[in-house]
Image: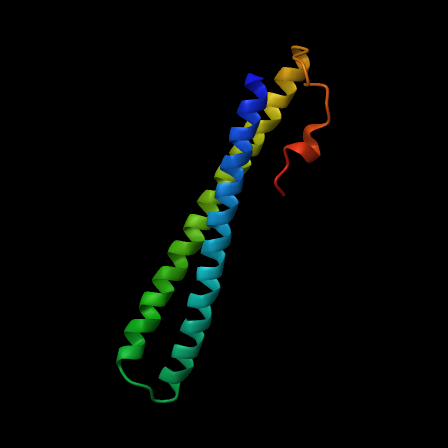
Length: 108
């Protein structure tokens, strides 16, 4: 039962990380689109304020990419932990450990 709860907790963490990653990816795409549009306006003689906007969007995009990379590392770590828990439970012949957890516990 403890391993079941532990696997549930790890799965919930993975789901949360996936949701945060998806949100950041959407934010990155919006910033990228906005930056491209603003840059095009700037090249077509747009106002000086656009240069600052493009710079801000570029910084935002870089931060999004850095956070996405960090989240991907966390997802990989959580998955490693999940696999370790399953292996340990199977090795120790803990009830339910021999079951196929790939579908039951996978959030992908």
